[in-house]
Every structure is written in structure tokens, then in C-alpha cells.
Amino acid sequence: MPSSSERSGLLAVALLTAVATVLMYSQRAELGFLHDQPASVEPESTGPIALEGFRADAGFLPDDGLLGFVEIPGGPFLMGSDPIRDVGAFDNERWTATAAQGTVNVPTFYVGRYEVTVAQFRAFVEGTGLGVDRAALSGLPDHPVGSVSWPDAIAYARWLDAFLRASPSTPGPLVRLLDDGWRVSLPTEAQWEKAARGSDGRIYPWGNDLRPDRANFEDSGKRPVGTFACPECAFDVSDMSGNVWELTRSPYQPYPYDPEDDLDGLDEDALWVMRGGSYADPARNIRCAIRGGADPGARRPFIGFRVVITRIEPGVSQSPL
Image (cartoon, rainbow, N blue to C red; front, side):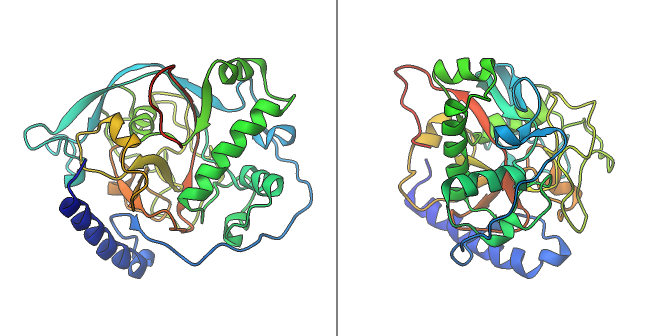
């Protein structure tokens, strides 16, 4: 954990960067460290919709045997950036003063194939009555939701966990996972990065070379989830680069990454790590190792999230998230 002086310095730098990001949004600012916006408002209700490839009876999750969750096998992967191999690397991606990257062992988990969509988030809002920014529900139903805060994302994950446990539409394999001590949550940044890059340390989800046909970036708006095929990706997961930045449940802290850091200091003011870049970002910001930060109240059109199903190990202290 950083010292109080390091934390203060980090927040000060993030605040300055946030101001620059807001001022330069139309010019696609290079780093994403974002801060709060006005309080949420009550959304307008809407009638029922049908969405091809998604199940209305299952919270508009994808229509497949695991409702869109993809297994990411447990094991080690290479985290962080080596600027010799990746000339776009930022300083906050360096592992230590003496090592550019580090190996992290991540247990098996399941990640959403797509970013959470407007239709999925609307099902949550209509199911709970939660007041959110109206902009979050204004997009097309198959687009990734944006303009959500970190508490909004956490609340959605908690709702989806309860919904899947209670719904008769939940497939048997997911029921068994949830009954066996797994839960829906936001990914840690280590889980996110492993799902994005696999175990070989690639720069982008599809490999080491930039591919404009593999992600939505340097664009004027979001695209429907899954628009860009990625047969070279390590796992069957879409839009890990671009479309919207994705919030995680990891507080923003200097590397080396330690999963215990995700359990400490959560009662303090924190920036929360977001990953992957957005439609508005340059190529440098859609690399697997890119790390941005947002404070809990930040809501921007280019901030969204995806969820995971992750194991709760018996007897191990867990984050309250």
C-alpha cells in the first residue's frame, strides 16, 4: 500500500489529469483519470424490447449456455509493460524499479463475453428502481452502457448475482457455480488483464501489431457489443480494447500488483482502476496493459464495465465488493 504522502500525490496528479481530460476530450486525451459529475437522476421508463441474440427473460444476457460468461482458465500470466517491447508503455505499467513486468497467478474465473449493455443495465434499473444518470439509458440497447459510476457498476453486479440465483431461467451450470460459492462481481485488474491478453504478454488482445479492424477506437461513438471479430484473441471475449473504458474492483495503486491490495483501504478515498480504453481514445490507450483511474462518482459517456463470476474461497478474507 502506498504511504499517505504517496496517496496524496497520486490523487493530486489524477485531479490535474482529470481536468486536462475534460478539456481535451474532443481531442482524445491520452490518459484516463476521471472525477465526479453531478448526482444521478431518475430514469424514464420504457416498454419491453426484443434483442436478437440476447434473452429478455435473463436480464438481456447473451443467449447461450452460460449466458455469455466465458471461462478463463487458472494459471500465471505476464502483467505490466516492457517499454523495450511496447513503445507505448506508460510509467504506471512498470512492475518495479528493476523489473518491467511481473508474473501473476490468477485462479479460474468466468468473464462476460461483452461489456454490459444498455438493455442489461436498464433491466437492472427497472428491477431495482435505482436512480441513475439518464444518459446511461439513452443509447441503443445493444451498445455498451456508459455514464455509469463505480457504485452503479457494483450495484449492477450485486443485482445480477441475486437475479441469477433467483431466476428459473438461469442455466444449470451457472446455478451450480453460484451454489458452490461463486459470485458475480467486477473483475480485479489482474483478472481483466489476463482475459485481455492471455498468458503470452501480447500488447493488444489480438497480438502485438495494431489492427484497426479489431477494436472501436479513434471514433466518434460506441458500437454494438461484439461488432469487431477477434479470432486471434486468447479467449472468446469481445471489446477488451476500445468501445468503453471498463471499471474494475481494484483500487488504483502502484505496481507490483498484489491481490491483497484489493482488500485494503477500501474505506478511504480511492481511484478505481479502469481498463481497455474507449472509442474516443488513440491506439496507445487500447493496449492490454493500459491503466486509467476514476473516482467513485465519475460518470462519462466512455466509462462502462463488464462483470465476472469469481470463486470465493472458504476461509479466505474477501473484499466486501
